[in-house]
Length: 113
Length: 114
Image (cartoon, rainbow over all chains, first blue to last red; front, side, top):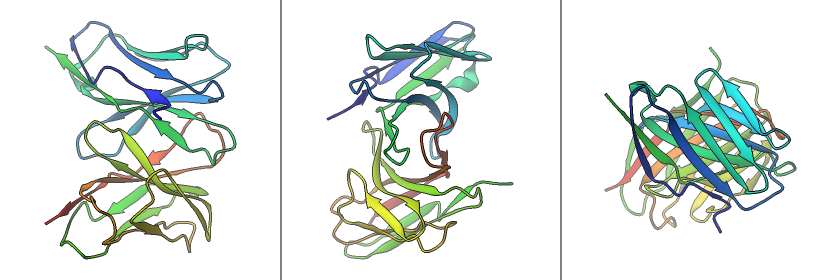
């Protein structure tokens, strides 16, 4: 039972354009949603998060949007840079579950010149 | 510098052997986790620990064992009972509870069965 889904395994975007990564979830009780960035053979690094009581959070070039009615969130990267090329994982957290994170399967973003 | 250290980076195991992956953190985090990454399957939770001397099974605990004798350390043993141990293993820690900051991850251990 995949509670967090990233239906696009890969995405290619030109440098300078917007990258939009999508994530869907099934459990309406999730409290926080987080995005992690991962390079090959390295651990994921925290990128940005959003509380379930908000619908937008922005940090520099990165913005996360949350649509609770659709159980959907998205990560926007503007402008995209070659260094953004990585795998991006969406994750969700449920209060009272020892802060366990449930991860999506990831989307590989390639930013081309 | 505070962080989480996994060792070794690469590990080779013969079939039938047990191996132990090390995970140490100096972040003073209460909670620690082990995840496994396989291609196309994201990160799956093996075991987690909220406090010293206590740990719980995650979604794929069969064939693995852990201990949490010290706050800083959470080693993972991959036993011979694990049928498909070749994977990338990630250790993480957090302050515990719901947090907008999630986990801090180590750099991972690549385990290969030869």
